[in-house]
Image 1: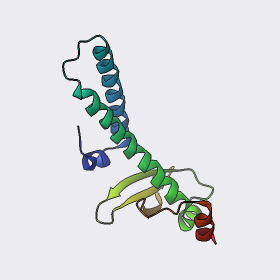
Image 2: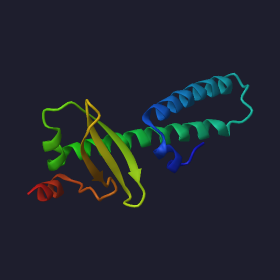
Image 3: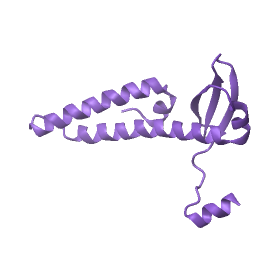
Image 4: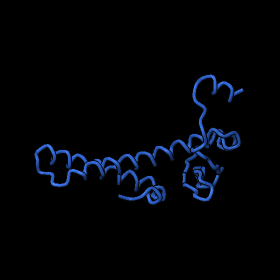
Length: 131
């Protein structure tokens, strides 16, 4: 099982491949467990945890890209253009660094998104933040 630093450095394709392999392994482990052929039952927990970590990293990347695309200066740069985004975690800033590219691979915009900031909960708190 890889640690979170290694997972954040992997590409989306590598993460998706690893997620697929882990899900297949979990299926096989469950089948072995049901037929009483599984010798190491703790492996089930380890594989489930690995799947959760992989899904979390992929989800955090998607959230960071959405947050960055919603920023005013980035939205202006991306307006009316076809774009793709790539997210990498910057450990010095403790934030996701997102690079937006156009069809011809030229860089359109970059953004730094901190997903760890405190999110106001409740309707009243959100209304106060928006006003």
